[in-house]
Image (cartoon, rainbow, N blue to C red):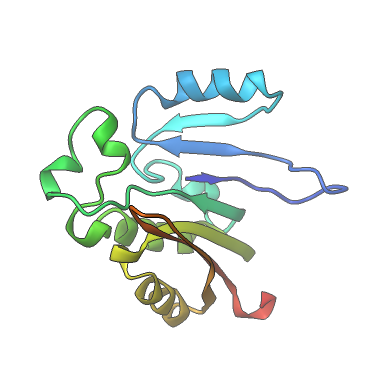
Length: 160
């Protein structure tokens, strides 16, 4: 999940942070970002564990590419690369934990962009966010031979 207090000053991003529960992310991610001249704070955590109070209501943009592939539940907790895609039952176990966390993080002008797979029931994800006061919709759908991917967009109704 990437997010941060991104109040724009002359179109510039004021803060970028990224987090993952994959332990190698901070080291590998920092090297990649530095190679492209991007500064970011990288944190290894489960969703936003430990950051909730500091970031509550302050995040303007959250971009999430969650583990969304339907897998057996035990794959979610495994170490290694499988944890980056293992989404459990219907690929929703991690997504359904992310949504409430995102609602707590987003500012009043906050936007959420999330990648979802057709198996995740993207319309249901939008419906859940709509019930919580967001205007949510499928922004984009792309199909390959292997999968149908969606980009979901959620924002406060007053920003719609």
